[in-house]
Length: 196
Length: 219
Image 1 (spheres, rainbow over the protein chains, first blue to last red):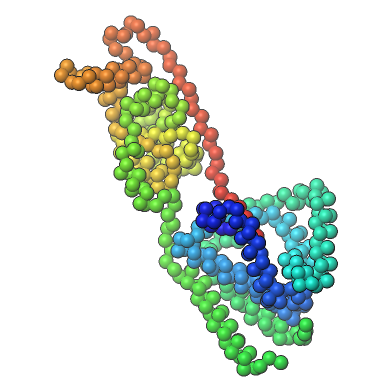
Image 2 (image 1 turned 90 degrees about the horizontal axis):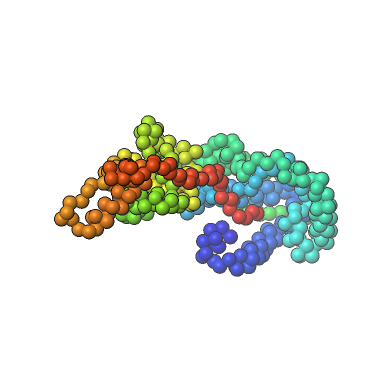
């Protein structure tokens, strides 16, 4: 929980409770915005619904703009934020597997739990699939370990690896996002409507 | 089907939102950039700077060296030539211009030792002290008076006159003893001392690479 718990504004013991509350809110909003529907989620790949792309792209843009403003005003130290470490081949292979699962099953792990919570049977089957996958991965971990731990590039951000100013990067990123929104709208208008 | 007018209003709203996003992002690019402060803030720096605590006297330092206090590190901020010519025992030479080099950081930015900076006077050492303090390096102190004061007080102490208080005599005898430790020969002692080679324990500074603090967490 960001700066609040390490600095003692909220006692350490509240960590899990805060996590549960955030999780509940996240799940609720996910459900409320229709992300528990596998048809809606898979729509990105078939071109009849781009809500997923729009939501995640907007979230990323808003978050990065907000963080940079907070950093500029001195509320947050941009350099102290957690940056996820990059294991390049692990990320690529994992991404491909995740993508295939996404198209085939119509859920991503988070939304599948969300959909299971409102009683969707396909989501429950999907969760069983996730667990089987976890089991296989754990059993064969020694086999995957070189890929899992190898090809480590450090805690990279796109701005670091491209070597551009974060402000310009975000500006270009925003423009790209808006163009993407416009283009996917055009695509959606051409694709046959699917009602669900 | 969705109401067409509503759809038009909505699409207008999207345009506004898109415009706001672009403006916000452009704002980031256009905002005047400023150099971020690293280390402690100016207020703390000032209060540290005017505190007399940041000085150590030559007598205190001599006492530390004689007692082989292992907890401090002497840093010579003069240039290499003067360092080679004469330096205090076990000092490490980091000239002022090399203060911010990467290899100097391991000595200057650590918690293990107290760091005592010195130069000929305390002038350059003070500059080094300010820089290091600004970067939030801890436990830095400056040798008051520097090498010059060291010579006039420890190596060549002034003999007190008879009308001076006892304290002055005590101080003198301490300084004299210290100077003998540092190899000054006095006529009345000349035959007694056999120029014993003094051994001082070399201090070890583990130069650790500064690693970025990875914050905990993830998604």
